[in-house]
Image (cartoon, rainbow, N blue to C red; front, side, top):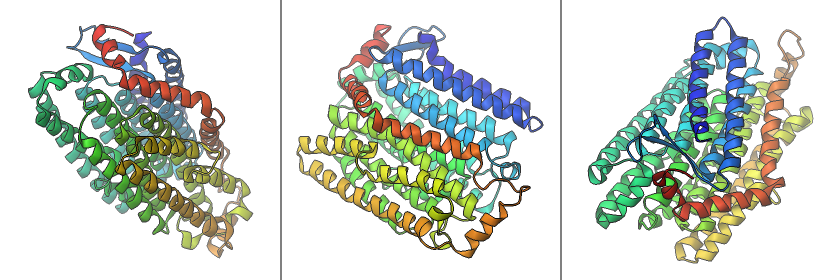
Amino acid sequence: MNNLLAVPVLLSLLGAAAAFLAGGRHPALQRAISVFVVAAVSVVAAVLVWLTDGQTLVLWVGGWPSPLGIALVADRLAALMLLVASLVSLGVLIYSTGQDEDEIRRETPVSIFHPTFLLLVAGVSNAFLAGDLFNLFVSFELLLFASYVLLTMGGTRDRIRAGSVYVVVNLVSSSLFLIALATIYSATGTVNLAHLAERLAVLPVEVQGVLHALLLGVFSIKAAIYPLSAWLPHSYPTAPAPVTAVFAGLLTKVGVYAIIRTQTLLFPDSGLAVLLGIAGLATMLVGILGAIAQVEIKRLLSFTLVSHIGFMVFGISLGSTGGYAGTIFYAAHHITIQCTLFLVTGLIERVAGSTSLDRLGGLAKLLPLLAVLFFVPAVNLAGIPPFSGFIAKLALLQSGIATGTPLAWALVAGSVLTSLLTLYAMAKIWGRAFWSEAPPRTLRNLRRFNDPAVGSAMPGLMVGSTAGLLVLATTFTVAAGPMYGYVSRSAAALMDGSYVLAVLGGGG
């Protein structure tokens, strides 16, 4: 069963090659290859979730002995994140295939989009399964390459400008990561995570602090933690809807995952947890204040994305089993909710020709289904009971209160304020885009779709995939008990040293 760990990465890479070879002459074949590959990765991820609930799977690539080779490792945390990421990627891929041919050529050219999208899936999969820091670095580089291509598709001025900012920021973080790798290897003689967990503990506290600061700086850029988050709201809104959705759902969570993994394995007692808590509080507040100042839906949602990363950092900074359980549940929930909201925004832009609140109105009356698709994830994001957003936030609040430090209480207060302001931001979108009177521009754009040659205002595949992700997000509410039990076991395993025993002991 350990060999299954290589399948998500290898299958995605081989699928990318096959989609590239199919070329632009066979768009239907490219779509079929991409959907099949991501669906297969989802099935493998589901099997890994079942297998890892009780053991940690380890694969030493090439049969090299530990700790010399490259290790792929799947525990409950890695398997859950892989499953949610692959299901969300599948939904986004189906959404993109539902676009009209002219929209595909303009927004997501098939010959470019599908191979690059599969490379992105390979990078995300490898990041979640990486058992050493160098393999994690390779994953980030693969993500950088794929995301830059996806971000600049269409070659418009705004996308090239946003892509330039994105690539410069990420090249800086990659350089810092290489410096961190070199420093860690020179100090310990290894980059294997399990091996590092043993060797870092014997280093002087000052050296540990420097190494931790280097890694935390790199992963904070990837996760868009304030003050290293300014690049995100300027980069994501310019991309096509499917690209923005998958970016918002996945890329920052890879950074959060890397922080969880290094914080629990390598630096469980680091004094930087206090700094992390302060950064989490600032991320929540600055992000949501930026969101409520926006009148463009994509930018508003991009700021809420930054803000809600702060909730996950809140849980990590507590350093408790309850805090990590709340963070894992929140991350899985947020991937689906944020991605769904960006897909709905893509439908709004298609229907109304704009995502500016100054140019929208009347959508609840004109398209009630679109209103439902927005309303449910919006109130979930705001944390309205009984949705999963409320459950995740309640878990974090309980952990913060149980910790009882002044910083923990400040984080509790900040998270409550952020939730209220998130509700205000969602109500702002709802009131202006759905309840207000429809402007002539929206009515003209809807009348355009009455022409059979133009196509449907809301194609079935686009609506169906968005609804599918909404159902997936609702699963976190309906099955909250079993799922929270799973993430609690995952959090407990992060703290008990079983990961190190599984990797260096040769098996689960």
